Length: 278
Image: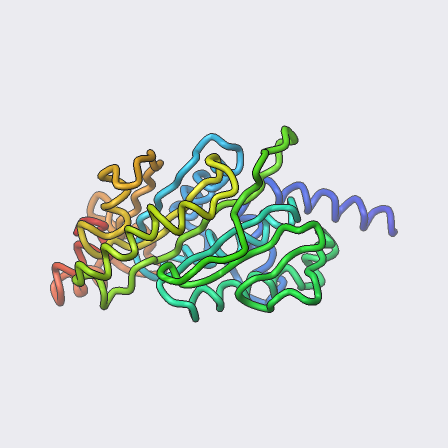
């Protein structure tokens, strides 16, 4: 019976390491919830796995609000990467400290779940800060803060990449600009300049990927900045507007009728945040 259980766990572990969506489904179920899968989640998964394999260096994902992006591509993805390689070092940034720290806490809670521990017995150091900065016993870990805040004493990725096929970390930026700040040139420029300065400098290696996930807010937001060559590096661009070919891409979340109501209420907001076309 124990051998059978061990065999099942090994099989599950391999499946979850191969698929971000299967990982998310598994832990949603462990928490008594259900992950509602849609094709856009598979596109996000495909891009993230390509980053892990080193096929994509920098990744930009533009997607509509309430799309499941933060759960799938930030909280669950970081936990899975650290499970697979407890030496991975990841920096997570968002427009506010509270949001980044909340995502960090959720990631840490996921890693602490008994269902996670029986597959990946990753131990987090007792003296590690519970939200902003925490380390595994293998000296991997997570640093979370606001995109506009200081980042001290922590670098993403590793200085020299071992040739072992493992993924060693990234800088993950989720919604770097608050909706209310979108039309402030000072705020936009400040966040974009930090990408070129402080944020880029926290890579432990020039090969450490930067992943930006956001809804478009303005033509000169961080997406516009990197797409126009502002960082001097290429980004693989995954663009997922809420409507494609006249149909809602995720009817479970937004019917086409609901989307049209949003469009009629505020066309400029809808064009940017929902259609990724500011």
